[in-house]
Image (cartoon, rainbow, N blue to C red):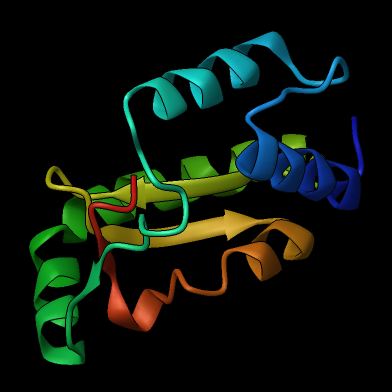
Amino acid sequence: MMEIEILQEIWDHFVKTGETDERMNPIVEKSWKKCQHNGLDPMKGRGRCADDKVFQSIRAANKELLEIALPVMQSVYEIVKQSHFLLVLTDSVGYILETIGDMAVEKCLRSWSLSKAPFGAI
């Protein structure tokens, strides 16, 4: 598994030049190229945030989903931890309800604040 710093360098190079790296996973490369082809701007895809009251109501409306999904997410995380994965649980419209992942990945995604659930980030 590639270190997060190398992945960040590859991403930065791709965003600046549009060129991919031979070390990339072909599935990730295809996804990046598809986004690029469709004109998605990686610097503008941060989503909107809900205020705390709205966020709490969204979590309350998804209480059953959270109760079922969180133990499964924790089990999956125990298998993939230190693999640079971030598990993200969203509701049916894309509000981020919960994340579990490596600290290195979470640091890269500081703009995804659970207390201000991004909308449309996924």
